[in-house]
Length: 240
Image 1: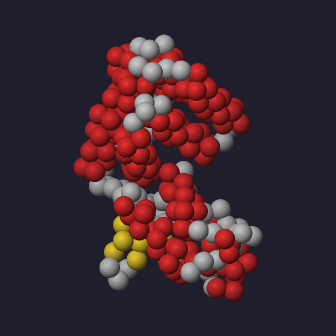
Image 2: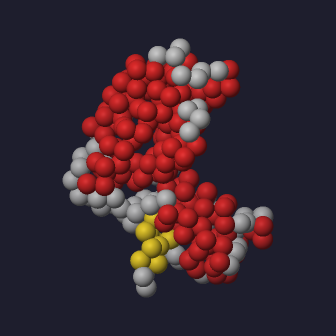
């Protein structure tokens, strides 16, 4: 439900006047990846303008970028909605992830260095901290981010950007279709992948990445499902 303008103005960021379209894009994108904005949620322009304290131009710019990333859909005379992938799209996204990420992990294993070691080790420490804290939302975010961090080590920025889009679309798919909790061994697979990459064992790393992604896909119940729409303000981190 949209907020009245007078109330919405009370929950905008202190830096509202300086919020640009990049910030709006990142906030919405991250909320989708973190499963805070669920598929089908209506991204109402008026409400977004009130929440961020900006005009329509900046909001529309951010929404256009999100549509280009295929994480929202824009419908004529209806507005923008968080995308709801079909079953076939779900299967295609995971096929694309297997092809792309297996290639990138093999490529990364050909060039391990101290910067790569630090990036991956720091990330794994963050994953461990989230699990120890019992912070489910942060665990979800960190696990998805691991694949992006790993892709960035392959010195292939175009493919790394493609992985970023696929991860976002995967988050929507998992939000709709996940039927089982992650296996305990999946937590260890990120660490094993890191060890294989840093030791230059590309073939083994690619094989494990394939197994890892198949494991994630196997938790999905690829039957149509629906869920309640999200509260836009709360999902984007605005108090009510």
